[in-house]
Length: 415
Ligand code: IZC
Ligand code: ZN
Image (cartoon, rainbow, N blue to C red; front, side, top):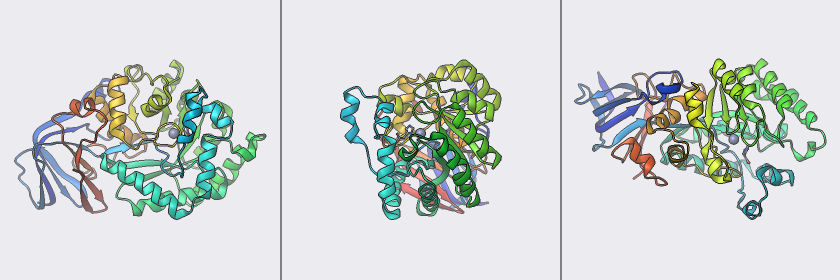
């Protein structure tokens, strides 16, 4: 068998194994293969193992002893937006909370105004710039949410643009509908009126045009309460969407409970999740997506990752890249936050940004591990070991990204 591409002289491959989310102590049971190679054919991993490879290839890459991991997966982002919110920093320093600023018409509302006014081209260019930064940091698949349109026309526009990104970017894009991101100012006095609009106008149109696989809701004080979130997600479920929830972030909104009850694929944030929420999520097989960039940026407590892992939940990590609570595209920085502030082990963190993140967006069969048959999304990292990468924080350790696009493979030199 002749491969298209052979990566040889890999110091060590680090990879979780399988297609299902890893829970509890399995999160740290990753495979480590020293002095290894990876062979790629038709955009898929043909073989990976100890050198020497008994496979010849059209093209070869000398990994020069660097380490290799699966391409990272960012399972929670708000890439599709315009504008930024550094102007709100002064209010934050004065002690105004995220929700205070939202209630004053800032926060999400300010980004909605900027996004609605931006042209398609301007929105696409901004998103592509962010995706390029993500790719350079080793991220090969990105979930992207709508949510800065907040009316039918604008939400559909954003979702169509997100789908255009699929062919414009090397990064794989997974779109999520988040029409229930905030109650738009036009509906301030009539929140249930907006909920009806999401259900009766937006969801059917998103489905009809097949614009998103997932439906998400910001279940939080000042956004959508438990009953409103439940109603939207139930309707989405009936239409065949898989569910996600911004759950228990700033207050105990019972988003964790709701995720479990409705069988959501993921519940995200979970800083304030209850024991009951954890139990219900566990029964439902919901992935806990933790977003420590938000805790860092808002100066708030981190999610209790150790408690979630010990209770047997599969944990994933994401940037939550957005202009209000986590203005960074850098998933490696998030990995360091998890390592230093959430006491996750390096092996657990790798699982959390590869296989478990893939499972949080229903891609566990295709990506997230270096195994025969998976998509050839691989990162070569210029670090002596996995711990070093997270310990030496705040810089980009990626040397090369190998990204499959259909049957082809693109090799992107970063350093
Ligand atoms: O723009 O503030 N948390 N949604 C929920 C966000 C943060 C994004 C934003
Ligand atoms: Zn979010």
